[in-house]
Amino acid sequence: CLTAPSRADVDRAHGQRVWLDIGVASVQNLVWADWPRLTLWLVLLTTSLPFHLIYNSAVFFALDTREYDVMLASADFDFDRPPVHYNSSYVDCFKPNTAMSMSTFYEAIPTFDNLTKEECVSKYAIDFPTDLGTLILVSSNLTAANEHLQWIHWGNSVSNDGELMTNKYDWLCAQFGVPSSSCTSSKPLNVLEQWAASPLVPWGGPVVNATVELPSGLATFNGKDSAELDTNDWSTDLRHDFQALTDE
Image (cartoon, rainbow, N blue to C red; front, side, top):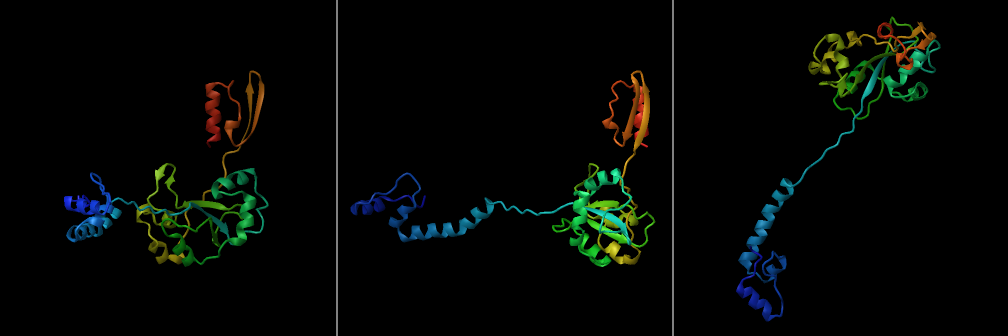
């Protein structure tokens, strides 16, 4: 060890009534070391310190990103207020698809940015977007009635029904029929005027209005969620038929 004092170092230190550390690594012993040994210690310190700092270090990088939903609306859709002819199914499906309540959504509409086609594709065709939110595609070529916003897809999603997503914006390439891993921003940009959104996915579910004759009397159910109905005293066949009805 270069910091270990020699007999001559100890004698010189004791001659000035100074104690040295023996048997342990002590930097203060270098004060009494000769110049060749001190120079070698400084060279080793200078050359080895960067290796220790790099080899024993870990660099963490965190990226804030978010999932967003893509919806479609007709050009004459009234963004100032909710549709007049919406029902409870529309309200129930709104929050799961937009991550906000319907009232909050319409309050936030004035803060949305109006983008051109090219700006929209360029801005959303990226991996790990940090400042993007719900996207509404406004189209003049829409056959659906102007009563509902139509849900198209989600962007920057980790998984799709449990399947790992390999592309964060594959909804842009739905019309091309290519694997999500092959979707690039150049595909929709090259055919921007002919680009179309994927088929519409209506917000809603089966609404069952049923009256069932039971030994205890008639049981009436009005709603869209069969889980709300107590079927404990139903026969197996009756439960099966009712479940098939709600799945239609």
